[in-house]
Length: 202
Image 1 (tube, rainbow, N blue to C red):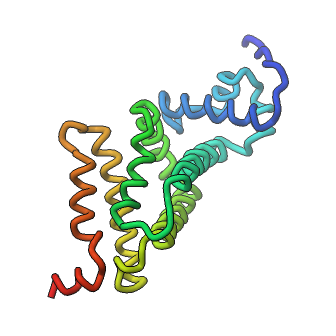
Image 2 (tube, helix red, strand yellow):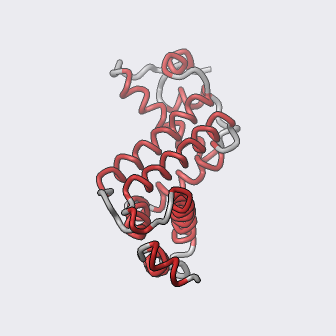
């Protein structure tokens, strides 16, 4: 077996990012279960021992990838959100984050999520993420659009679910799915003060 030629010494964080990049490419092309830590190390021109200096296991690498994607999403979202928004404005903000993704990046992200959901630790992390995003929605929507906390939570979950569905469907079938029309329909119902909306349904 040919000896691995170690690449020059780099700062730990930079090396860690290189490993994550290599792992992402391999997970997307071969699948998480079919990729070995040795392959990830080789693709980064490192020994397997060096990889384990940065990550405890292959599962730890996958978890770090998921966290990195989530944190990148949060960083963009935090720049867009503002106080007392209309419900549809929050949905548009969520959709805008995905609008900035290239198709290749989005496809890779979907591949990673699908594989990651098979890992219990990551499923728990993603469940906590849904709670975090629901709270983010609740903290930024104008109170006039909801009648109580329970309704606010359900609105948040609906918006998050619609966002996720639109993100996937619009990338798969852009000629069929019109995100802006869906946002408009959401606004027609939810961008109405709760007191008025409740009167309409009686």
